[in-house]
Length: 471
Figure (cartoon, rainbow, N blue to C red):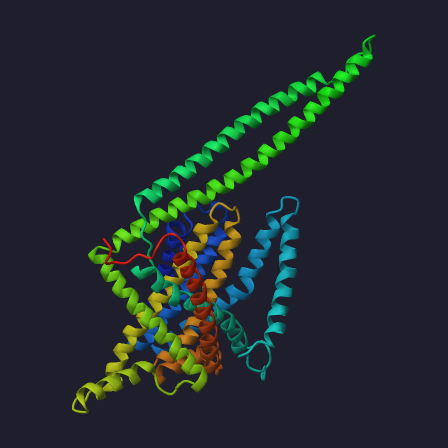
């Protein structure tokens, strides 16, 4: 009874945390009329974090085995139901219902048709994906769905990890900070003001010419026939010619205004970037800046280390019979004690694994949620918040399931069985790691090439690279 209360309380607390994160951090100005979409995000958030929580419960031995197994299965089945049925249907329904001319009943029918097509395509196309086992006992098996979801989720994790492993050191190292003087910022601000003044001046010219055009059109308007009809006709043709020239001038001025406004936007971004670079350069000279620079070198080493071992795993394979924590701990004890120190390696590695898995899970989830927040900030005000939130809710669920598939390798063998059983039986876990290493390396190399090109462009510009020794 107490175990069931702990499970329910944990899910309720995580649901409230997901709701609070959405409203206070991720999307502060979210529309109240789409509260159902908010509920879906909070549910996916709760089940996703609870999966990571269950890994820690497994190591600590919290709750009974049967309750943990039921909780595993509840989380996995709930996430699959949300990812494959509820979220696709809701996304299509919200898209169709947003059109005022379409009735809600027709929107529901259209969403059901889309869901049927989506499920058929998901199973049909998934047959050709790597890592999906053959349907020996039928296609409607849990491991069939998990393997398909895992391929998509592992691809997402690998791309984010590859980009983060390269971009994070670049944002920490002072080597890649440019020195910016106040005179450069003042010059950029002066250019921005000149562009804005030109925009205002030309808009005034447009207003004057539009008023003149209206007067010319009024003078050239038809008049009643008279004895001076020929003379009036000649005046009308002259006024029409002048009106045509004025209209062309207005068109030219509007094109110039558009060009100047684009230039002003670019200059504004340049001013913001120059100020940011100056603040970074000044901050890098402080004690905290030097510590951040040292951390950047450590992260750079870790990036190279991770890329090297990913390449090594692809070429020579990985050892899945032991967990890396026990392996590394045993190597350190043998190296430093020369065999004189004898400890219960299995017991000691259990708590080291707990700390290791906790750090991996927290940092991974934190990085993913930070990326989600950046996406929402970038597209805020576009008017398509509910659709974007549904997409990111889908990505959150994919990320959670795939994280468990990858974390399983970090656990000792005795903790892997319940995860395997909860995922529907034996899966090609080795494939998921190989797939991750392949995409991770490709994303890291591509990101490194992009950053190198940006670095070369900055080096060739007028602004030299910043050195922490320079005053």
